Image (cartoon, rainbow, N blue to C red; front, side):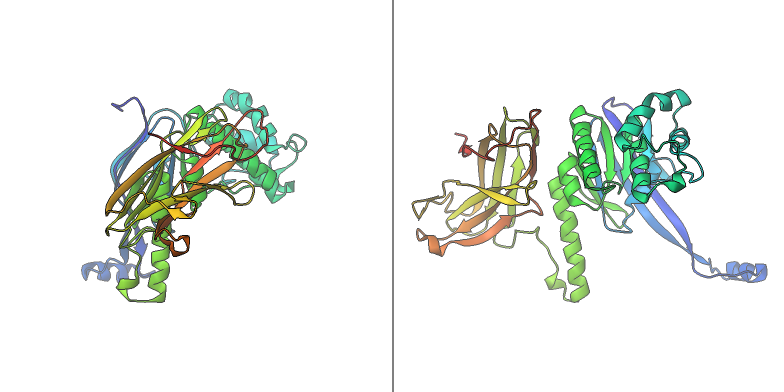
Length: 410
């Protein structure tokens, strides 16, 4: 590839499958149908001219509803399928893990299965031996590796298969719907692994229906619908588009009235068509750093507006830590703006006393008068679109979530 920073390049890829429409065991019937122009099958166009690039170090998310073509795309990237048109270029060694346990033999021991699966992933015996101890340690199965796999519980098999996949140190790791594996403690270990993988700059491609995982791990994402890319860019935006598409489909099931279909992102409407919170710093930070983010909203009417936001502690069950944005002081509403158009504010938030937790920023656009009781919410960003940030300190000291308010940058 010309650009040395590109790990995976998907270039105008298309893929179709032939689906039989009738079953016939007669050669005569088949020939007669062909002469009449009856094919006996239909072409299902699964992917239609898909193009995107994954840079080295990206944690790249691919989302879409069932049947959208995302798993087919992953199999093409993994060289299981060949595209009819276009090509996929991969820089370095790609490790693909599309289904847990594929290639495992229940009659072999856990150790033998590690070597068998490693060989299927393209590793030599020496390479597998070098990573074997790490695989066993991560799976927490050192006492069971000489037992046959058929004697493992389903949870043990999942842990071993997943450990082989993530410890096989390729240049690009491809995962398809495999994040929710094992018990709670093992999932926490997997979470730590993915956070560390992100920070270390290793390339990962993840296909998932879990929008929380997309926002937590990914720095870029695309959404596929009916075989085409319909959204790409920031994970929070792509996740919101995915949820909006699901809501739209629910609406279609309930009514045939096209006017009831969702045309705005959650929290926006005809009067407030835009509400966004965007991180201006990295989303994984430590206690010595400062989080900076921008709030942008748009109104189409000349009305007084302000914005209040909150920090949600996702780790301890969704508790709120409210940040006073200065819009309301002693029951008097001081609007950010009284004119229609786009309003933008930048905030910074010191993290000196934040705990090791996962957080989300949410907020609402308000209008009203100086009487607090007259406030009205006219737009919002909640957990379906709120950007996430993660505080990670080596000492793991617990303490108050916030000891200082954010302050406006002048």
